[in-house]
Length: 117
Length: 107
Image (cartoon, rainbow over all chains, first blue to last red; front, side):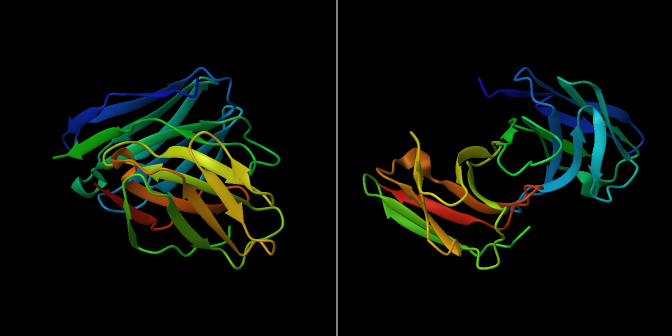
């Protein structure tokens, strides 16, 4: 089973709203990721969590706030977003979060489509 | 992480083998070659990866040249469902996507 589940599949929010995207995996993976994908562009890495600790933040604006409450769950809290933040948000996970990452396959969820109005 | 160069688009006839090239001339010894694909509006799907040796699984084969500066992904019998954007990624730590190859399988 290589399933990463993301909810909701679609979200529309106003610029003053606070919302969250959720991600769950039960593969025992200890690294989890958030990517952002704009239309007709490749996915871009936002955050990496390793053993529930934030290890990489790709200079993402503070209106995006990640949280890893346990090894199976990853949240992305959204607040005061702009219309240009509308995108597909992808969650992913892999076996390890430290040491040699390169040989550990990263598995992606189907994404959450976010529209900011 | 080393960068990759892929053709922007390719076409292949249904039932034929699709051969997708990738150049990664600056690859380092500890970097793996990964292939993912993304069908419209879906999350990226892992296909295959390798370090030095050729690899094969139920989806595809990966051929890596001896000097590791290029590789080819082979879909042995392409179907219409293989139409997607295919990403070749060279990875040490981060998985960084390039522009990929838009593969269209024609009936």
